[in-house]
Amino acid sequence: MAVIASASHILVNSEEECLKLKQQIEAGAFFSAVARKHSLCPSGKDGGDLGEFSQGMMVPEFDQVVFSAEVGKVQGPVKTQFGYHLIYINKRG
Image (cartoon, rainbow, N blue to C red):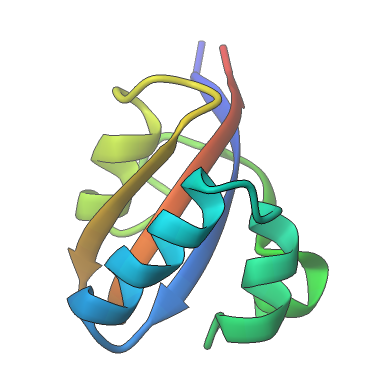
């Protein structure tokens, strides 16, 4: 049976910007609010929510983090062909 995950992300152009946004979130800013303001992905308008997806549906670098890193913690920067991501894993299983 396929493993399903639910995640949100923020996509930006630089690692530097990604790290700055991660600091803001770790200092108490809401992930969804930062996503709405800064994410270059269309999902930004939904607070970065990508909904549920199964392993293999996202690009490999993104997939690996979502299906292996700690749930409920901001991960990143993760570099893909699209740019730099902060990823928040909502649930997995």
